[in-house]
Amino acid sequence: MLKKILVVVGMLVAASAFAAESQRLVYRVLSGERGLQIGQADLAWTLSDDGRYTMTLQLQSTGLVALVAQVNEKRTSNGTWDAKTGFHPLHYERLRSGKPPEMLDFDWKARTVRSTRKGKTVDLPLTDHEQDYLSLMHQLGFLRQKGPREGKIAVVTGKRIKQATYRVEPQPERLKLDGLGEIPVQRITARTVEGDFAMTVWWQSEPASRPVRLLIEAEDGVFDHWLQP
Image (tube, rainbow, N blue to C red; front, side, top):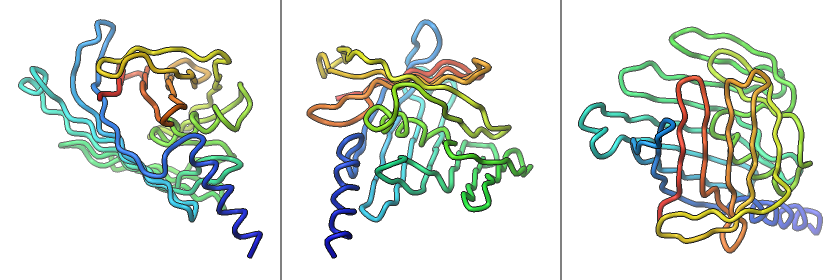
C-alpha cells in the first residue's frame, strides 16, 4: 500500500512540475514575418493520475482573414505519461475542413507507428523518444524540468520521422504579453537536423505552469501563438 501511495504522489508532483492536471488556454495566432494575426487557437489538456493524457488544439480564423478564408483545424493527441520519461503518444489525429484526416497510431511494444495521410498508410520504426506534433510541446516542458539541457528528440509527421535536437536555455527570460504583463519564462527549442521544422516554447513556471508562447517554423509557414488573458 505504501508503495502505491508513493507512486501516485510521485506522479502528481511530476505533473505539477510541468503542467496542470487540467487546463485550457487561448492564444492569438500570428503568421509570417510581418506577424499578421490569422486566428485563435484553443489548447486544452488533461493529465490523469492513472498515467493517461489527452490534448486538443483547435485553430479557427478570425477577423478579416476569416472573411477571405475559413480555417477550422483540430489536432488531438492521447497517450500515457510518467514521471521519469514524460509523454508517450498512442494516437494522434489532425482534422481539416475538406481534407481527409491524418492519423498516427503508435505501437510501442512492436516499435512501430502507423501513419495514415491522404488515404495512404505506412509503418515507420520507433525508438524511444518520438513525439507527435502536439505532444512535442509538452515533452519539451517536461524536459525543462526533468531532462538534460540538451539532447535528441524526434517528431513523427505524416511523411516520416524527423530526427531533431532540443536545447533548454539555462537563463530564465521575461516575456511581455498583452493584458498579462511581463511573465518569467524559460525557452526550449527543438529543431530538426535538416532544419525544416522547429518548435520553440516559452514555458512559465510560477505561479502557473503553462506554455505562454509557441513558435512553429515549418515548411508550410511560420505560426506564432501568444497566450491571451
